[in-house]
Length: 125
Figure 1: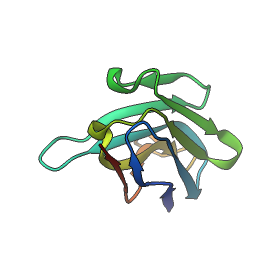
Figure 2: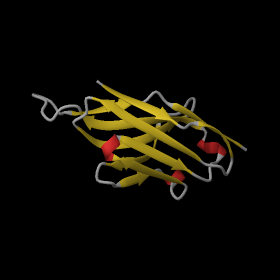
Figure 3: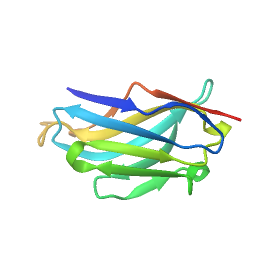
């Protein structure tokens, strides 16, 4: 199976920085996309940033210019560098990976989504 293990959350003052890490392990043939989502109570989970295996990145408008996502294909790891943090960035951050465990899956797509357990990021004003 596949596991995603996140680290790096915590409490920081507004204007500060944090770096999140997420490592995928287990039976992995190929990682297609790794991403970070976040969720606050009563709201839907939203995409923060994503990076493909080819290095293409995508960001939510609210974090452009402040957050940087990067991936290490050899380690199946994704990082999220968060700078100039704001109180509204407070949320539980979840790592997501769209990947293939196998090269061939009879009768269906090999692509599946996996999620980490979430890490709390709290930004105080």
